[in-house]
Image (tube, rainbow, N blue to C red; front, side, top):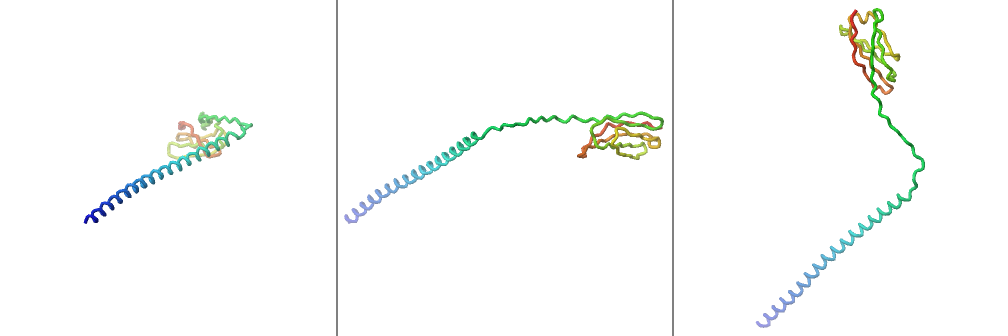
Length: 160
C-alpha cells in the first residue's frame, strides 16, 4: 500500500509539474501570437505610410501648368417681357420689348371665351376690330431656341 500511495503521490507531482509547464506554453503561445499580430499591423501601417509618401512625392514631381484660362460666369439677368397696347382706329396694336426670343406667341382671350394664339417673330401684333369686339385679355409668350419661355403680365383690351 505504501508503494501504491507513493506511486499516486509521484504521479500527482509529475502531473502538477507538467500542467504548469503546459500553462506556461499556452501563455507563451498567446503572447507570441499577439506579438506576431502587432508586427503584422505595424508592417501594414509602414507599407501604407510608404505608399502615401510615394504618392506625395509623385505629385510633387508633376510640372505646373503653364497656360491657364480665366472663365467668368455671369448670372443670366431676368428677362421681363413688357407689353404695351394702343388703339389704332378700331384695331388694337400690341407691342413688347425684345427679350432675345426666337418666337413670340400672342394669346388673346375674348370675353366670350374664345382663345387666339398667333405666333410671330416681330415685336408687335395687331388685334383686329372683329377679334376685339367683345374685349378681353392679352398675354405675350416669348420662346427661345431651347423652348424656354417667359410670359408678360396680362393686359386688358377694352371692348368696342
